[in-house]
Every structure is written in C-alpha cells, then in structure tokens.
Length: 239
Image (cartoon, rainbow, N blue to C red; front, side):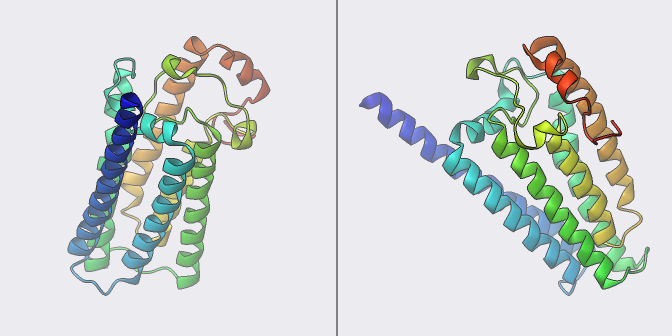
C-alpha cells in the first residue's frame, strides 16, 4: 500500500509540473509576442495564442489521462543517462530558442511593418493548416508510446518498432507535422523575416531525423527491417 501511495503522489507532482510548464509557456509566448509587437491590438497574435493553447490542452490532457507513461517519459527523457548527447543540444534549439526568436521577429514585424500583410483568407488558411499539422504530430504521439522528447533507446520500457497510424506512411511523422507547422506559421504572420528561424529550425529537424534514424537502425531491433517496409523518413515519395 505504501508503494502505491508513493506512485500516486509522484503522479500528482508530475501533473502539477506539467500544468506549471504549460502556464509558463503560454505566459512567455504572450509576453514575447505582444511586447515585441508593442500592442495588444493584433488579431494574428491572439489567434495564434488560442490555437496553440487549444492544441496543447487537447494533446497534453489526453496524453496525461490515457498515456501517462508516455507523458512521464517525455518529462524525464532529457535527464536520462542513455539520452543521446547531441539531442540534448538540438532539442532546446528546436523546441525552445527558435520558437522564441520567431515570436520576437513576428512581433517586431507587426510593429514596424517590415513585410506588409497577406490577405486574411491566406492567413486563416495557413492557421488551419498549422492546426492540422499540429494534430498530425499529436496523432503520431498517441500512436507511439515511445514518443519521447529526446532520442534514446528505451530499453527500460521495452522499446519496440511502431508501425501503426502515420508510421505506416513515414518513419518520423512527428517531425513531418512540425515542419509544416513552422512553414505555415511564417505565412500566417505575413512575415518574410520569420522565415529565417523557420528555415533554421527545419534544417534542425532534418538533421535530427538523420541522426535519430541512424540511431534506431543501429540500436533498435527490427527497425532496419521497418525501413524496408516504410522507405520514407519525412515526406512520402520525396525523402
């Protein structure tokens, strides 16, 4: 009984950490976007915030409720001894620093009007595609209980090859969704300058895909055979 109580307490503590991280991310995003823009009268900033909040709440809430082990793995992976050292460098760049840079640039572009504005229907279409891409990545996360935040072979969790859902089409669907999310964000904000961190981040995604795929082929049993079944890493018919 004591052991069960410890597990429950740990779960509650972790859920509080997830909520704290979520609130911190949202507050930080709002501050960066609107301070950079110098105004709260910016519908693109609010729309992007609402969409991001909705995606995060849906994906993280379902993950915590239905797939708590995956949620725990995503929280803890960065501190694991078997996490690849190169990924401890790539993850902060892709998931933290580049998004913040893009928010700053989007806000400054709004303030100073560097890029002008695209038609509203183009921006709204881009936001809808962004949402779809984010949900595609979320689908990949739900289908793969080994969908970690960092690259490591999860022998402690019985790591096996996942072939279901989007993994039947490409080997790294989470990154596919991420790349489309970045591209459409630049269109939505009507900012040519946001393309700079966008292209750098996409390059980071591609480089990470190469390293992760190589790691999986070398260290995860059955993955090399899986590459014969699903030949493309990110984009069917392309690569």
